[in-house]
Length: 153
Image (cartoon, rainbow, N blue to C red):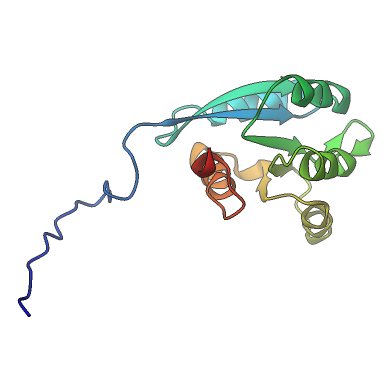
């Protein structure tokens, strides 16, 4: 059996593993604070892997109307929406629409994380660490998980 030379000079970017073009991802952003929504949208710009197109909602009612009207790849949902948590909305997105949810929160506690994961979130982001790489990593983790998403479209 002959040994075959394999060219291992693939570069430091591992271009053979990921396509060079950025993928477009439709994201439903649900947060009752317009300033926080703007910060999230701005933090998502300039990513190397994803072109994130946001539809913004400030209430659960708006979010439900948006998900009934349009198709989204994932939702970024704040934990507190007004005076109530987003847990019922997360459960609805998860079970009724099969829409992956990444929870956003400024209240980063083990109790909040545990409650949200039990409700069906697929990922978690603290508002304190919102940079484009964190947002892209969370989105990519959800979209390329075994449950499907962009990779399955």
